[in-house]
Each structure stands twice: as C-alpha cells, then as structure tokens.
Amino acid sequence: MTDAATRIQETISTNDVVLYMKGNKTMPQCGFSSRVAGVLNYMGIDFADVNVLADEELRQGIKDFSDWPTIPQLYVKGEFVGGCDIITEMTLSGELDQLLDSKGVAYDKDAAEKIREANA
Image 1 (spheres, rainbow, N blue to C red):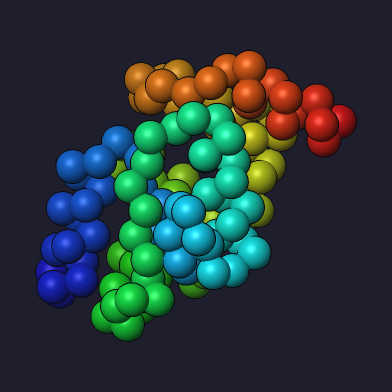
Image 2 (tube, rainbow, N blue to C red):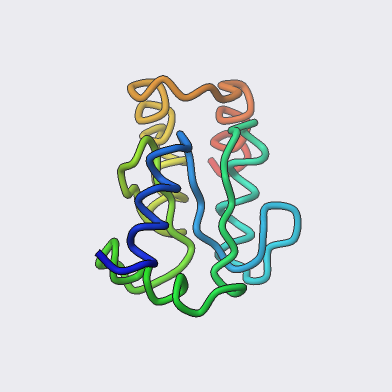
C-alpha cells in the first residue's frame, strides 16, 4: 500500500464518518464539497473532514483508493458511499438515513426530514 493509501485506511478505520473534500467542514472550497458538508452539518453528523487541497499525494491517493474520479468522497464505517450526486440522491430518498441507522451513526432525523420537505 502507498503512504497515501495507508493514511486513508487509517483515517476511515478510526472515524465513523469521513468526508474527503476540497476545503474543510467550516470553509468548503468547492460547491460539491460545500453541498455534502452542508448536509452532514445540518443533520448533525459528527464527521472527520480531510482537505485534499492541502496534500497533493492525498488528493490523487483518495481517487485511486476508491477507484472514484471525483471529490468529495464520503465514507461511513470504513465503506465508500459516494460523491456529491450520490449523497444528494440518498439524502432525498431517505437511503442515507437507512445507511446511518444500519451503521449505528447518530444524526438528527428531524433535520433529514426537513431537507426532504424543502426539496419536495
């Protein structure tokens, strides 16, 4: 495993929810990262944010690790979930709630419902 892959594996193994993104959870630096971080923040999900802009090796390493070409990338309990479009769809369909419930990750169910109501 490369150094980047080792660091990624360690990060996703030691945190329940990890978002590899451009920027950080309080100051995203791209619209897609902002959307996913916004959903996670609004739903009250405790997540680790990893700024790929701060580390070129990690920026490419996460794409190789997941075999997914874009950032952001969300991991829940060590499992790659998807990027912005997938997380948006899962949030609106309720699939993200189901995944979080099945993995034992705490979140604000009322906030999740408000997102769906606002986008209905």
